Amino acid sequence: MPKLCVCGNARSGSSSLHFFLRDLNLNTIGEPFHQKHWKLRPFIPGNETCPQIEEEAMKLYAEHDCMKHLWCHLKPPINLRLCEWMVSMDIQVIHLERDDKLSQAISFLLAIATSKWGKPDDLDAYLVQCAKTQLDIRRLRIEIDAIVSHEARYLDVLDRGRLLALKHSQLYGVPEETVSETVEQIVTFTGL
Image (cartoon, rainbow, N blue to C red):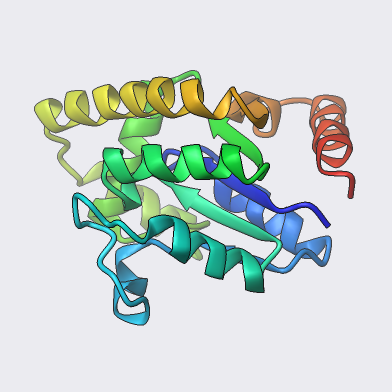
């Protein structure tokens, strides 16, 4: 079984894709470099140098077939090293991105403000909470710039390897036929 990485910026649809792959009985791990897991790993991903990122990734892939990684969980120099490592190790990468960066940034800031990252249990209460949330326009601009910068830098490296670049719009809010075509692309790419 080839090794696989689902990656992208936060609010790109990567969680849904990760759960889909898990439901296909792939042994997956979600967001191993997230801050909540730092205490479980023998290094701190926020460290600028993090010389052992390749070693940590190798350990993860020794135990799992697939990893979901968000760019915001590691600093850019470490993400670049991780991308280069994935290319050198022939890891299949599915990268998700949203065309509408403003919606993505708003979704990200609302998730931070509400602490709600998945589907809300009570949609009406969630919408009321979102309506009461004030967004800082400067912070919104910073998030949009980070999204654009990350995608350009990391895709440039990943494009040298086995990359399937998908758009959020190929999976969400589109006709079932479009989703089916995208799922077929994923299945063909991964060999599942």
